[in-house]
Image (cartoon, rainbow, N blue to C red; front, side, top):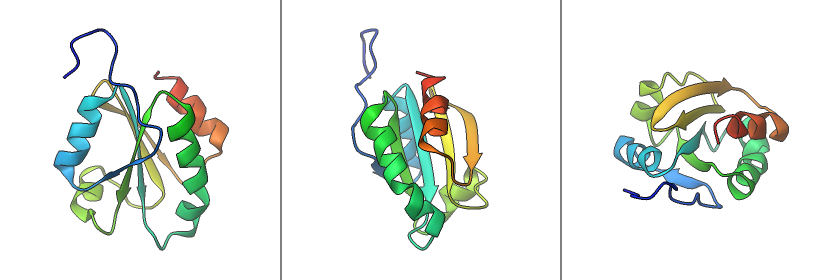
Length: 115
């Protein structure tokens, strides 16, 4: 846990999440976490991949990636019914859920509204 006023600096690449404990630790470590629930077989997810990587590299948010096939229980816990779905956490709490493909500008605006 960070004791000063600044949070841990966010990673510049997406973090791959494996299970609830991993997601909880990530959400606890960073002020803003954009979590991308995706699947390898999902065409729109593949189209969104460069956008998600760009958001990770160029914003103050951490980006977490959850493979819904490998983490079905986790996806169900967050009510993910389709992919791609992004869930935004700020200050350890879930604030936003966005389903489908969004532009890079839209995702950056979403992240920027919480950073």
